[in-house]
Image (cartoon, rainbow, N blue to C red; front, side, top):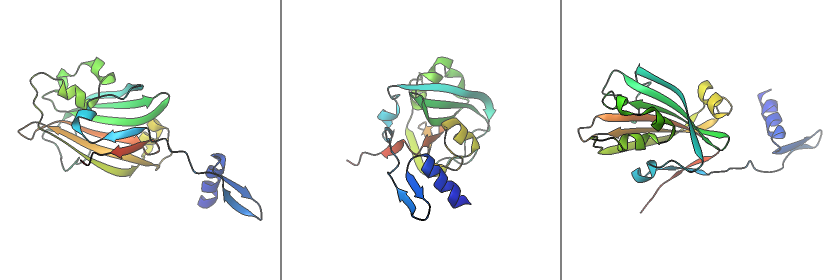
Length: 192
């Protein structure tokens, strides 16, 4: 039954054609539009891509971290949690969960939530010194909430990036969990 359903989906997408008593034939490969290169150098994490719109899905105070991120389980009991949806044109491609330390949570202007990258919001703050930004990339599966926000199927592959931005005394100012659609994102690294 599962195989039949999977073949039905592939046929609806125009990737295969099925013939009774002859078999199933591949018509074409799925299109991969890898336009969203996930940056790995700090200076490129500061800039928002052209044509991207950000919508705030939620902004809550006194929220705990959902799990250990980048080997980091938090300095504080509660954070400001901002969830944002990024769109390129009409296509949603990224859901970000931004956890802001109480030391900086009140310094974020509401207008910045829809106009800046999370890293840029912290970087632009007066009197804040950053010393480390660490990120870890995972291949994951879309849970119900992420699948709904990104317009993908439940359990579809996604790329998850956990990012922590810290001060010289190793206090995390911002912790982010980014969920990218896997059909449009790739990791771009400088090797020199």
